[in-house]
Length: 462
Ligand code: ASP
Ligand code: MG
Image 1 (cartoon, rainbow, N blue to C red):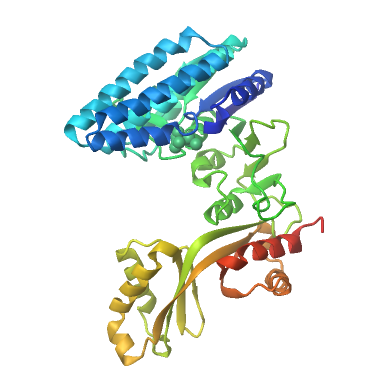
Image 2 (image 1 turned 90 degrees about the vertical axis):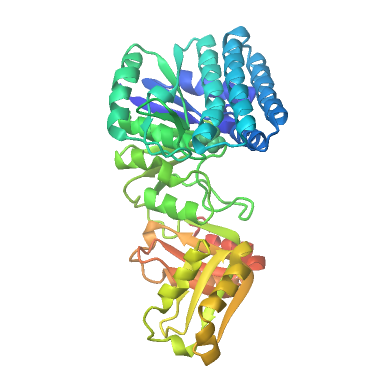
């Protein structure tokens, strides 16, 4: 008997249309099924906003927000033909959230632990709704709170699952239900410590919940249902004939998400990948689409550059000076400065003459970082060992990603040839030693042209 974990994201549970697709997908899948659900789209954000309002002392606004969520869920249940059953549950959960928010408003303080207890509302409400709906359509389904199932440490807001105790509880609580033919509908995102205190796994954490359960249950497949048909070969808003990728490796998925393709955060599916469970990204609204399968091992399919992605809104800072070559500790001081300023560095490149170090950072932090670097190197600037710290902004990183690039000669030449023909000026270049990505910096205005040029060059259909 195959065992599948199916995770449905926020937009996949937030409308009548989505829920009808969900029911058909779960009902029509053979074998043992575990469903993991997110809160309905926007709910977790709204709960954060309510918590902020309460912390600022505005208990009424906080309550209004939660009452709004309650009404939306009651409406959604009614829209799909569910009346009373989950209604009373929503009411009970709403009262609890309101009480928590009132306490926060009195204290003017919302700790990470309290915030987790408040935001848990979203998944606690969506799971019974989905289970009730499946039940109404003849699927024996049962809502299960992950608070008794996924055991984590006490890092509130971004807790770490403990695989041993979680696997034990999954065997104890889920397997008998699966054997009996029932479909557990588990709350994503939330969990609890061994002592039973509610935690959350970080924003977007339902994927993580699903991967942890897939690993704990030794599932045959983890399916992540979202509102797009997988990971695309490029952003379809930039490249009209971009297509979903049938299969990518975990390493490719990680590179793509780092450079802007945000379908999933690969780190969250790592527990499944490590357990060699294939992860499929599928579209709730077009369930027949093949989607993208993410696997632990590289997929050898003859492609070289599989996908081209880009990330804008960045600035390039160059620290330049002839007096820097061969001076040990120079780079360390550059990065001490970025660390002290808490600026995250997206890309680094250093010329081999050691005359310059380039850093790509978010555009908002470029001026602050430039000033900090000028302070750090004030003596060297006076002596002209460092000539200048320059900023170029706005720029974008464009990355060509594919395992097939490794060991294939001439890939860089093709990338730069295509960019040259596309009249794109390359400002800086970096290639990771893993050779599965070439990333380059271009002016923001040339970002789209660069993506199109590289995508077309490596598109097998051209
Ligand atoms: N509801 C949570 C969030 O919005 C978790 C998730 O959707 O995966 O972050
Ligand atoms: Mg989500």
